[in-house]
Image (tube, rainbow, N blue to C red; front, side):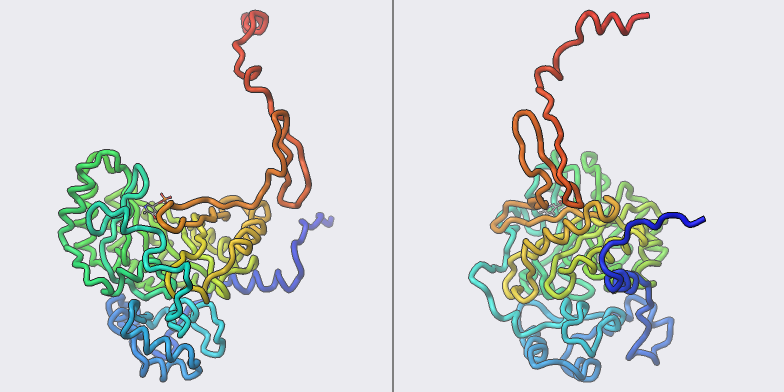
Length: 412
Ligand SMILES: *Cc1c(COP(=O)(O)O)cnc(C)c1O
């Protein structure tokens, strides 16, 4: 009674890595073992006790390298501060300099090197900002930067010119100018709250802001872009979720880059949001030695589905100043997309995009599946590399009105 086995992909080692990467683990309390649960699980405690200083790192990460030490010292006085929640810090592997968690949040000396093609506003947001804190780049939607604070700071941050109080720009708590702009522009049907991280607001402040946006009749769709569920899952309280559910349709885009970031704590936090009907998407940035490997990305997207999150975008890393050491190539990105499409469900396959330098917006980039195209046919390849032909039906014939005889056939 043996049933045929489904085709197995890749080597058995690759299968083993995939299984290991997809396992859900708790981050645990690690170096904070003596902290009572009530404090550990309190998001305000996590924020207050973030790792921000060199003396903390000396204790918590004795294997800190010269490049990291120099990076941390420089981050203190330069554009983007270091901050890591104790929860997230525990995901870091102190014995591995190339740890994918470590590379995302611990500064390195390389951040101070700016390649000629790198800038501080790599996707030209400032040029599309009609009022401070709003970016109106696309016809029907705006990006609303509501705060300069994040739970932790990603070293490849595309908005390092604004976040962690870098700009001195005063974020007005009433948001009157931004809301007035949205109310005046009836073409805006979609508002994306970002920053900084909007989920660092307390419930009351976020409720006030969402309420004001919901009161604008032409705003159909609200979205929050946040990395809080990953850096600070304790913030996703039942109270927050009960508040958010009043504002549907409300979507949440999370940001995760590596399957190890999806812990049991994160799975529960995401589950609480999904349970109040919030559709969840994920945005990843393709990062060198973090996720620029097919097996890592496959584990990530499959694990996201297990958390009820639909992978939405993979971004080619923006040309932000000091990010060269974290940038992978477009060829690598295309190779990863090729390894996903058809090899796993379409629900798990995000769109790979390049946010065009200078303000062109997001441009989809895809592996080539159309090999040739003529007036009469399209030559395609499938995910296995097999070649197929599809006829190009002449448009005139397809659009021709029904003849008398075919009409007659339709009659009783
Ligand atoms: C990404 C982005 C959006 C949202 O784009 P979607 O494709 O709808 O997710 C809106 N405004 C700006 C400036 C953006 O960069």
